[in-house]
Image 1 (tube, rainbow, N blue to C red):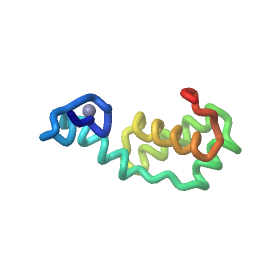
Image 2 (image 1 turned 120 degrees about the vertical axis):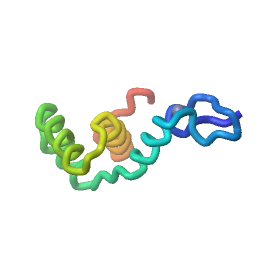
Image 3 (image 1 turned 180 degrees about the horizontal axis):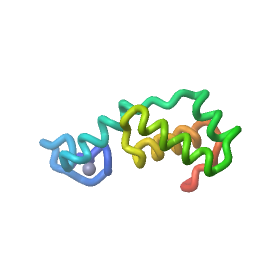
Image 4 (image 1 turned 180 degrees about the vertical axis):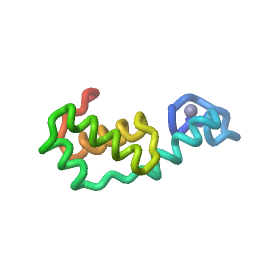
Length: 88
Ligand SMILES: [Zn+2]
């Protein structure tokens, strides 16, 4: 047994992803780059509403899916210590 690298579902060894959708999401997630300064700006200098707007326009500018971008931003923010890991 192997695991889908995007959703972590169990899949057959012969498959790389559980679905075409997961494959697309996975590669899009890898392509998303979040500049450290952008991260700092939205977490240190923006209110929650401003942050939502900044993230939405960042996603639109790069044509990234908003939900994927949000996930990645949260991951990075946890790593950088701007927010606490809800699972920790
Ligand atoms: Zn999957």
